[in-house]
Image (cartoon, rainbow, N blue to C red):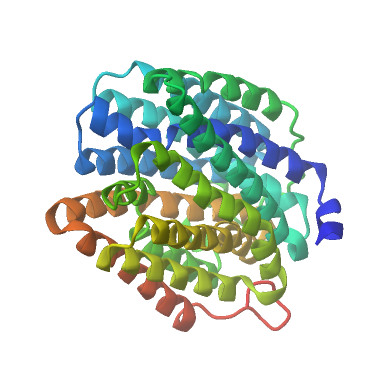
Length: 397
């Protein structure tokens, strides 16, 4: 493993460092948004679901557009710079909001930045390594990304414990945002293959341009995402089960720490075991965790263990899904394929978060978390029987 890590190119590590710095700021904000909504802006789960759903759905549409543009122009860096720049601008302004619609606007700006940068960044990563090391490359990126998700909540918890007002904590995110933008300027441009032969430029982003097996997997991923609502609902459930408010950021840092430690090993393992098998295991773990949180009331101590399992799920799926898409996509359409994956995954968050929030208010945790577990089990079944395995010796069997 250490030798494989040393052989990864500089681009992988620089992209990972950028994600670490960005997510330190982003995940500092993330666990504070429910607190801002409920204790300052006096809004409830439905407003949370609407804010997260609309913001992520908007980002999702831009992920497809930016992926198609990367395939046409063979350039990734400009979109990455602009995308991180928008996030650096929007986050600290949350300190000034006085109503939840204003928070929605700023979350929207932050997610627009994510929509512009995510697919170009993924295409840059996929192009920087051969297929047999692609899982490891995406895993390293996810590990560093999750390292930021550890640092951010820890910083938030430390600042809140020191008596720093919540709005001031949000304002401090301007500093890592500026560092992140500076780092993006040092990125090299991707070496991309020529435009797809025989595919008119106006059709580069069409669904029919993708291989049939890849289209099936994208639909399975969409079904899973329908039950994978905003992670903020996990924090809301944890608060209901007795986790003190000051410990909520620490709990999310714990989840990210588990994902950070396991992302590179599990994603790298998919280079040998196969992407499909790893995803089946990850989806099954998700279903078990959501069923437990919905059907029972675990103690605070047990809750920390169950959410450690959620970190395992993240490590086993986040990088592996993107590596599988890159494996199955023609090289000249890799940006388009990753754009479709990112768009569908993000777009499904609108109904996922809205439905989850509605179920939570109407039927409680049993209905909401039971729905999430059911979607995960359905995705497992579809992935097993409907999405064919890779040919013998392939990377995603």
